[in-house]
Image (cartoon, rainbow, N blue to C red; front, top):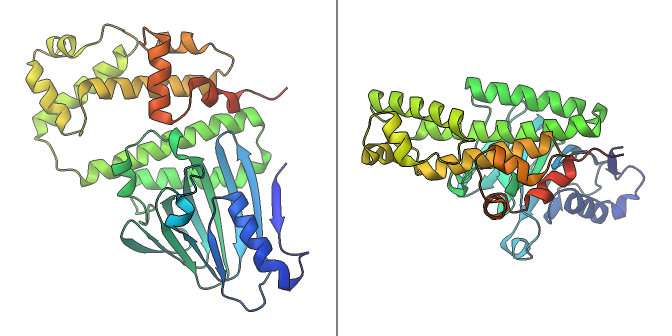
Amino acid sequence: MPSVLSTSSIPIPDRAEFWHDAVATTFVPLDVDLHEEKPSTATITSHQLGTLQVSQVTAGPQTVVRSRRMIARRSAEYLTLTMQHRGTARLEQDGRTVLVRPGEFSLRDSRRPYTKELTEEFGFTALQLPRAVLDVTDNDLQTLTATVLSDGSPCAAVVAAYLQSLARSAGDLTPGVGNRLAATTCDLLAVLIQERKDRSAPEAPEAARAMLARIKDYLMKHLPDPDLSPDAIAGAHHISLRYLHKLFEHEETTVSRWIRRRRLEMCRRDLARTPSGGVAAVAQRWGFVSPSHFSRAFRATYGMSPREWQAPHVPRA
C-alpha cells in the first residue's frame, strides 16, 4: 500500500507546518520555505521497493535547504534522484548550480549541504536509496551532484527510460519483484556514474585500453577462483606485473581492489536475488575464502552487514 501525505484536508494556516513534517518524514530533515501566503494543496505519494523509495511529489512554489546543522544530526545518508515532470528546479550542491527542467533528472547527496528552489507549481518523481547500497566512490558522486544527468548520452537515455517505467509501475509491483528491480536500479545508477567518469577521464593509449578490456573480461570470468592474483593475471596475459598495475592506474584503483569490488557486487546481487541463500555460500561462490573477511569487506563498502542487506529482499509471508 502506498503512503500518502497530503495537505488537502489540512486547514490553510496549518499547511506549512504539516508540509515541513511531511517532507522531513519522507526524505531527510530539511528547512522548507513556502513561497505562497496561502499554501496550495501539496501531496507526496510513496512506495517502498526493497531499499528504494519511489515518491511522487506535487506542490506549490517553495525552497528546501539541507544545512550543515541538519547534517550534523547524523541522520541516515541517502542519495535522491529526481525526475522533473512539471516546473523548473534550481539545484545547488558542491559548488555548482543547475536548472532541471521537465524531462530531466538530477542527483543530490544528503551528506552535504544543498538548496533546491522551485518558483512555480511543480511535480517530480524522487527515487531515494541509502548511500551505502550504491557501489561508487565519493569523488565520483561529487562530480554528478547538481548536474543534469539526462544529457543525451545512450547510457543516460537507457537509465532514464528504466527509471520512468519503474516509477509508473511502482504501485503495481509485488514485494519480490520490487526488491529485484530496486537492486537493478542500484546497478544501473552505478553504470551511469561509471560511464560519466570514463567520459571525463583522460584516455589511455588504444593498445592499453584494449589490453585492459581483455584483462577485465578475464577477471569477470575468473572471479570465483580464490587463487586469482595479480601475478597469475599478469602471467596469463604475458605482461609484467608492473605493467598490469600501470593499466589499472587509468581506473584510479588497483587490480586487487577492482577484483574485490566486482566480487562484492556479485555477492550483493546474489543476496538480493536469492534471499534464502546462505551468506557464506554466496561469499564462497565469488571467491571469498573467509566468511568473516567477506562480512567485514561488505560492511566497509556498503555500510551494513550482508544479512542487513539481505533482510529487505526476503519475500513477505
